[in-house]
Length: 208
Ligand SMILES: [Zn+2]
Image: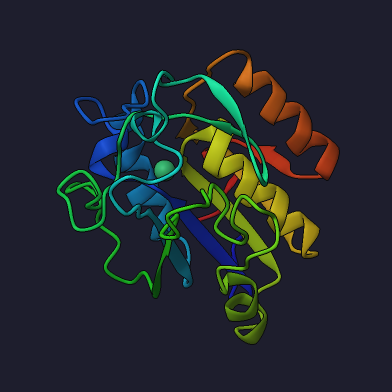
């Protein structure tokens, strides 16, 4: 049951991740009405927005000879290469038009450093550079984090793992997420979340 110490993190529901977008997640648009409905059950909502400069290090186009969905080694570890997506200020980076959460209190942008990606809403992919979200949630006395959005196997999973790592009770609402699922990434992400103690629930079990 969401209470005043709970937050809903709405992850990356942006045009480029919806069908027709630059990095479309299959069925990504299907979750929008459910996410709107869930958000009404929460007093506290944070929205995340993937927000890259042109030429970002996570783009395959920044690595001559490489293609999208290949994995390469960067100074901070393995990085999946993506089609150009969510470029700052572009229509693709805009939140989905159908997203209707006027009471959301914070929009946290991530991936804005040219040389580091950021799947998680808490830490960039170097696992060292904080986004500031932890401090925000601590100062607001948040104890429970619920995560929904796109994509299950990347930004949702990394955000949920980091929430656990900071001691938040963490719940992933499975039917309000959709996955990219490249090279077994979904099964891997689910296993890692389970190990980290992230609870996975259906939206019907989140009280109104
Ligand atoms: Zn990105």
